[in-house]
Length: 257
Image (tube, rainbow, N blue to C red; front, side, top):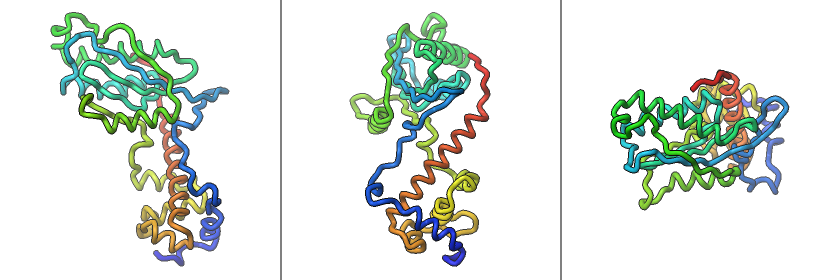
């Protein structure tokens, strides 16, 4: 399918979508800047929490780490806590969480500790013998509020970890960090503007179109490559937000430990 397959309206929309001179260098907004809403409230609340396992010796071997990594997302979802990322160290864990104004940090930590400990003891019976009591986590925790730039900085630090502090596991859970499948993009096409639809169709080879490079798409649309790139970035941000909202709508509201 060639250039003639683009309608005059689509070409005009792409031209109208050209960024202004001052906006071409603007970075895409962080996904963590977006306001969350519930009822009549709008909020943007994130926290870094850390807590230790009760035993002094390192407990997070491969078996414990694998079960914890499986249990943690389920636990956070059951309590409707937004799990952004987590880092498992030999004897402690660090979590970045999003939460609602009605949630208290103390309750969040208590819920996560209690539920993950239950899963660990149920799944790995030897832990009770090694630790002596059905209490996997030590008392207390560390907590620090984070803004969106601090989250991004922390995630970069975790991903570029040093050899002096090698974690057992680093997992960036937040869905916006993951690549999208073409079918996910295609399902959201109807919610995009005409200019966004045609750019995504060209770059990702959707709806019968052959996939184009950034330069090829720019030439076909009579735009600069950086202009096509900005349209694509804004389109992807919109698609990811739509997919996230749809997942939230499908999430059960019941709470369970």
